[in-house]
Image (cartoon, rainbow, N blue to C red; front, side):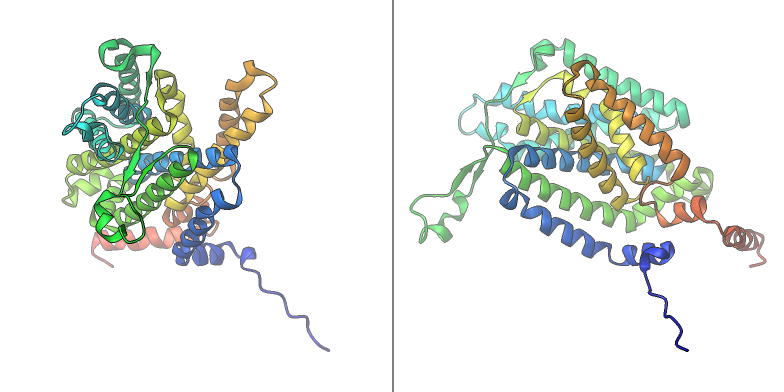
Length: 384
């Protein structure tokens, strides 16, 4: 009598599926971004492209914030402050320096402002981090919350620089000037190539490039000596300091890098939206970005990408559903709160947790953890 051979399914074995996903995550990224590249071609719907731009913008923000709570274990409630600093760096430079002619016209150029906004974000990250990073837990979270509120008050009250509640309308559209390639292109084009970036499609590809670069940088940071120091600080700050890790130095570097990505995303947002006002940088934006990190899995790069994709898409869905009732639009934050409560109950490590966190929080086989702890104590006592 023939026995029925059970069909193998990797989805029935979560450990094997996680291992397969971890080993092939780079191919997952390649497939994902190849598909994303053709979205404006096959789905030329303005609303869909607009939504995908928002998704990618929040991916950059969430990956930047992930360095602080995910890699170093600090709770940052003021990340929107760096986002606002990047946006207002772009807006004020364009507004105040946009009328300058040659040779200073480059000061209001999109390509010049992008790195300046990232550096400005990093500078404010260092200025905030140096005096406050000795704080821990709730005290640090309160200080970062105060920083975001301070940035908002400065934007509202410094009318001479930011135009306060009126906001800044940007009339300088980004230009891609390829005139330097004219010796190579003169056989095909009569004049030097010069594109004005109008509409959503150019920003779709700009943000797609920024997301790819951000993921590469985050993966390199995670596997580097710097990243391992951050994870050591997150696991046990005292043990990391006893191992010779300069806690303050590595925390300040983490804060600067994280803030630079916030500034970069803010400058792209300003040029894309062509209008910058304090209303875009409320405290709830920090909570939304933090929710993306928590939902995906703190410290997990694929998880944070998934968290940004889910919550940004959900924001648009809830906004459409609540459109007949304008007074209830803000109720979408209540939906996010419910999602977080459910996540904390059933998947506290996030949708795609780090392997170490998943092992500690999700493993049903306690003998594995006991064996790890036993080997650790043997090593400390010199018996291992």
